[in-house]
Length: 204
Length: 186
Image (cartoon, rainbow over all chains, first blue to last red; front, side, top):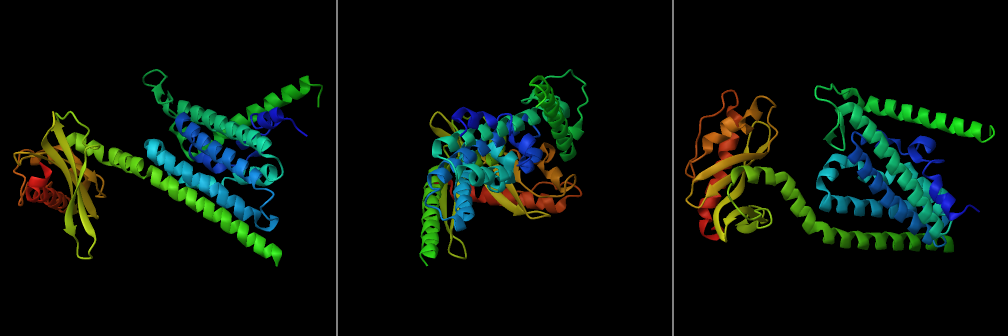
């Protein structure tokens, strides 16, 4: 039985969603045109993930296994609508930018994946830790990816211009192919770090 | 049999509880959402056509009942008042007119004396580069200072006659409404 800490930290590196699980790529590639967009999308997903994990875990003994997927989807969809309403009411510009990708959180494989693979088999506290870990991992990934693309594609960081005047941004990085390139390079670096770690750890 | 019953009951309960929660949430956020939508969609136009106020025209917006349309639905007019001290000295009202591609929404600022202060296009789907020239200040400035009543006319943008006509129609609609409901507005 893994400890609470392990369940939380695994989402931050060992199974960090878009890189290690390679799940939830649709929002990862689509909305990470700036750091703020990535952060907003990540936090919205984290909220849904944490609460759907909690409720799925609490209800896991009442839900008959034949209709579990339908029940999970109803629970997830409810929290997605809550996020959508709150964003529209208090973060309208971000809501406009993320647009269709907020309702699409429902079909994010990470969320249903965690509900099915983890929350439906573990207690509420463990599920909370798992949801929070994976969610934060997703948020960090999206923010980093967004910052890299924003820096190269627009020459800004969090909407503040950081490069010299006359810098010609690689507009390519803000287009969909740029997302693949950035994701691939990041994934490559992560594998490199893992390899070095493994070598140090005795060639596991 | 028991299994089927259990499935039905559990799914029904989950669905009903979610539905209730979402209905409550929707009610809670209805006010802020309306404010945000107006703020981000209409505020730029309101700011353009009104100047020198010290209130928040979006927050102070007023709804006037204009009666009912042909299908019996109530027609409402939203008025954005500009106040100095506590006195309304001008209002912004939105009118719509048919352009080359669908409706053109125009925010019209009208002073208490019945003069058009300025107009701003809130929404349109005119041809970019041709019909869209009616959104430029070189065109919208032509309305400044005209009397705000029925029959406002200005020269059209050449090559964009339909779009210009749409804007004229929208301005006339708004001006007429302000003139008609002057007592209720000011």
